[in-house]
Image 1 (cartoon, rainbow over the protein chains, first blue to last red):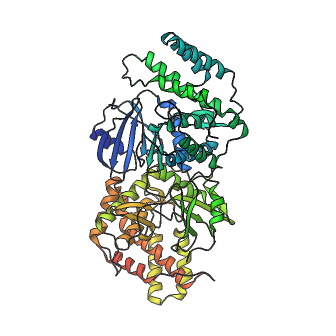
Image 2: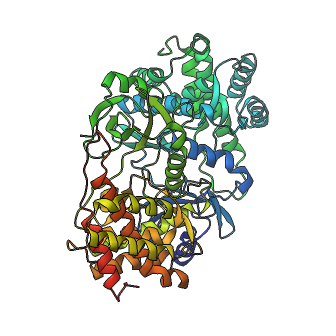
Image 3: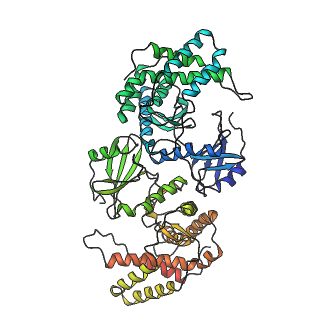
Length: 312
Length: 312
């Protein structure tokens, strides 16, 4: 259940008068999502999604919100934000910062096929290009410093073999330098549950609240590690090749990116192994936890370490 | 036939590489429209419309193009412009300034019903509100000076009774002062052929190339004079009341607007009587003309002059 802040139809009807999108027809809480409150808002003009931000403050939102507006204006499949009559995307309702966006077509899928992976790769590359002129900037809050600090913090809770494996990998990554690779705005969390698929097409990428400026090919690695993974943590070669072909059909890897690619796949696996370890061993007090199996990304990492074929 | 500048699929395919909207699937000239060249562009991501501007120069376009972007961001049903990888809406193809926009749902309808007139009135009011913070400004090029100059220019070609009638009306309007009425961005040409209807809903308003800053209620009068007109030039009361109720449900007329309303209806009729007279008597050399009957708006005017009921 993700409606932390209740909005009544009367409140919503009054709120909509600040916008040019018609009168309220239906208001319905959305169960998915664990951080913010979301409602489907049907008006006389169409369908929208209202988000009430439960943790992000209004002054933290412009990077994400203006990014969505920028990408929507470039034709990227994202939920375009709607401005109010004060010409602002972020408004306030019941004490929370809000965002109204267009409703996207499609649904989350658990078992993508190769054609869908190709489309996701292609749209991701288009997104990387379209964000080229985006003037916001945010360092990756899940970058090297975070990785090293959290890995050290969770180590005492882990079994010895796993802790040693993680420490070795974190040390190995510390010796890598991705800073010379092409960088820009990345989604940084483009898992299957953050994309709506409309048949084989991308209906839209959602949940940009990990977006930041970082290495573009690292974003591809994060995406591939989820979209193309098998249950045992190995990667399905057919889907991986399709995703990479979709991506590189729009933006071909430079030689330096191709050279770093095996390490980027490992870095992407470590990123989520570490955050899942943290959520598993250090759940926030009072927070409803949906801790996912940290072992999954350990297995993904192990497959990458053992691999010789990186589908390039 | 409105394809003045031919674009080949090869040229379009290369052009699309400047955008993030996928690869070309189909390219099809659009027959409607008499000023610009328009193509339906189907890509792997969706459907778009490409306009090549045949008469407007690139430096004249920002007012219109940024207005469309502004309105789209406010959720108004207009074709949102797509920015290229240089972050510009206006590009160049085959020597002409271009604009790519999203394809809108719906179709032009000739015989609107009252429900459709209500929706058009409502969306027009939302558009007026949404444009409240638009920072572009353009004086109406079809305002009083134009009206008086063109009326004088066409008078020698008209029969005496009509010329006298027009001169009297132009003199009468010169004594009116609409400058104190609420003003803002108006479409200024929201005829039935400039809206796509999706059932009873507005799929989108199109063809903003007469948009300018002028009296808001004058825009309503222009719209009503076309959407609610009968073949004999009289106004259908049911549709007129529906359009006005739709508009005023969002933005109620101020007393000064209601007082000026009969004169605004006449001013709106004269505006198009004059331009049709001009197109009829002074067609541009070499231009393919689609001159419409000027007498239609003379009859609309006559009905307004004789009327006692203005549906308010």
